Image 1 (cartoon, rainbow, N blue to C red):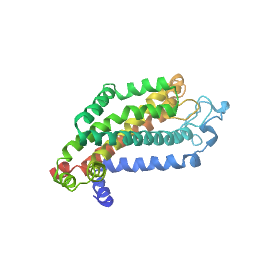
Image 2 (tube, rainbow, N blue to C red):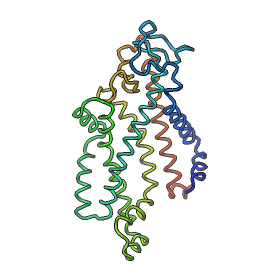
Image 3 (cartoon, rainbow, N blue to C red):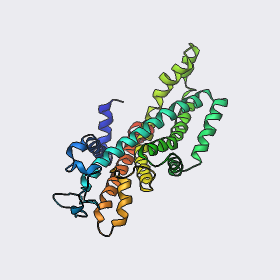
Image 4 (tube, one colour):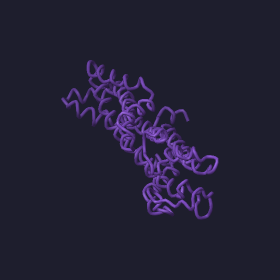
Length: 283
């Protein structure tokens, strides 16, 4: 399906199109946030105690925190951290999970049994719990949190792709490729994998929202980003102590998490409706 046709289909669903526009807006903010932040010195170490806990105003749109730092500037930069970290996690989860799913589904037998039993071990833990265990073992930092999420997420992609490959490998075009002596690697990556792109895109778009929420949860628990990094979950964690004094401190990071996760979930549903022929046929 062409990109123009896909966008046209997405426009039919107003919620999905609004979510796509919001994600595009966040992506632009993530790229240029250091340039548009009103107080770039407040992104990390700089403090201004004389202006602590100022309410939202025309100068400080989201108010200030316990160190007098502009919450609006820090939330903007937190967009960059959350989006980039989640994109890295999902990308590496795909790079690990998709090839393993291909090999498991295509070869079957002992290869399938070995890979899927390893996958079952990982899937026996809830993703957040497994990420917490790994992050706690590696030590609290944003890099370790991203690594922990990647390790917790790849099995889901392996199971998804394996199921797709099992059904596709019995089709006529795959049998024909085998009959003429096409190498297995070429069949898997040039014939079977392109037919798995639709479920991969749907899963990846929805995973981005889940990964952002998991990353914020790890930072909230002290296992992810560390102060003074302006990460959304970490900002909410610190703001708990000052909630009665400064409600805005935790409200705006939480609002951005909510809107971002909701947008990715709506986008995933919209992409599934566009790419799933069964849904389109029923309309």
